[in-house]
Image 1: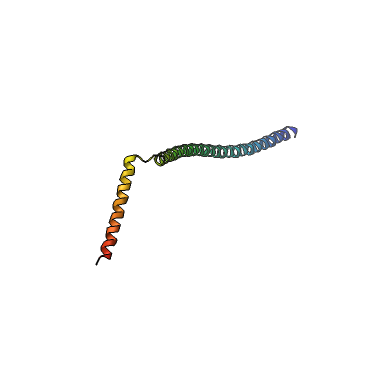
Image 2: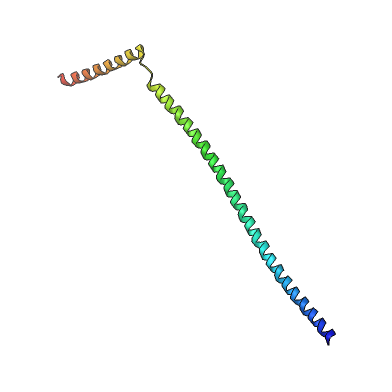
Length: 114
């Protein structure tokens, strides 16, 4: 009986080992699937960080360009405001103002005159 009993024990042990190995294989497959999902998520996060970096660089460039344009416009405005009247410009403005006053006076005189 011992000979038959030993074979039974060996077969039983081999079956238990095979069952445990099958469970380990399932467990490794689940771990591999989890690792694959983590790797995909990590890749997506890395791509999003790269896109955010690109957007930040574009924003910095836009801010720099806008600041330079505003500075140029402000400098041009100041330069235009700091221009002095030339004697010829003064004469032209005075002549225009006198002509306007003469036109107004003539218009009022025409209304008053019967």
